[in-house]
Length: 157
Image (cartoon, rainbow, N blue to C red; front, top):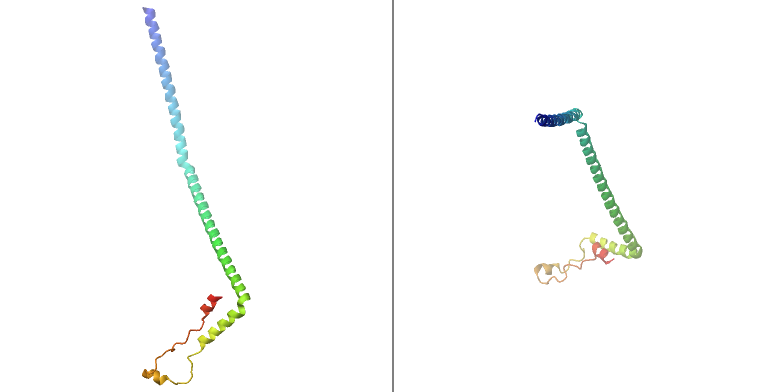
């Protein structure tokens, strides 16, 4: 009986001692991990280098994005200006071709129209104006036919 009790006690002591070893090992490991975390947190708070790095990276990204957008706008403006210039050159070439083909005719028509526009009313005889005032003769052709204006001569070209 004594041997069995001693064996049981030995087993119990070994179990408890191994359990306490495991427990103390776990406690030491937890303490070490906590100390490392504390040191890391102190360093991060002291430097704030990670936060500064993130802020600088975000600012850099924003700057690059703004630069790219401005670059795209200037490219679009350049394209618009180039297209307008091409349209202007095309219109000039068309006008040049028209003037080379019909230049004399177009210029003569414009001059006639300009001369007609600059003259005042016809200062001829005053005959028949009394009858018209009294209502004796109806005004058939009181408005002369409109001469070809500049816009009309341009549209016919």
